[in-house]
Image (cartoon, helix red, strand yellow):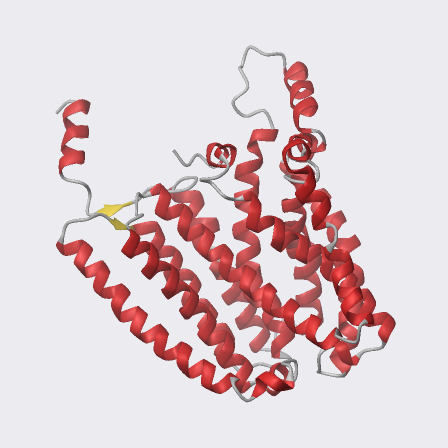
Length: 377
């Protein structure tokens, strides 16, 4: 059968399962889906007492988490072309360094640290949503009913175990403003009911799609099957110093996903696609002139990793030290002395900038250059 005939046949009788990947099946399976194993590994090692809290959190924060924040900076603050198009956004984002200390000085430190924790978890959920959207776009899974059900299921299914964890962990509840504590249990019940209802509706829709012979989005299913159960298991498993341990356990999966996506995107800085007849030195000079330091950072993987770890020492080294002072209170960081609160609040600025920029720089439909870098076509 000719290639043209096969193409026509595929258009008339589409495959039952659509398997279009962001990078390719192997890379996506390892980094975007299979890297959930890293969260399970930390969970098992920590709960079993094999991996102590401080080495686990410090090692993760400096060697994995902070470098993933640097990944965002590598394609924003270090990209000369971004300064031409997003200068106002990049400069304005620096104000996040002021927000925390200002709230602490105003006597609202407790509220600040509560909001910071909520935004951190929301950021994890938003990344899972972002990957889901990429798979939806790749696999032409964009029917309005599916978009709505996917979005609602994801938000309910991720937020129920988080709220249930707060409701059942005294240390976590102590970090919630007193005015909100009485409603946490009721909110958890509503989220659970919503998750069940949406889960049934979502499953019914997949059955309907199969009955109508509409393609089923295989990568999306694999992503949700990896991410949602992991959050439920980690958040509902008893463990010592749970609010602190969970940060590393839940986030390492997010970190590895993000590192691979950044490195895939950043290939545009390394000369991929440059004509093979171009002189290598001239090609690199052209890239440096266009992108600035980003071209050097992403020229080789070892450069990216090295700069990320240096950034991790600068950012997370002090943050981890100040954070460990809070281990003695088991309460919100707002229980610490004013200078320590100010230091922790200032360092939260790095994370806030990452969260905020991340919500702006991956909009495939609004920024064609991102879609091109991620091969969304």
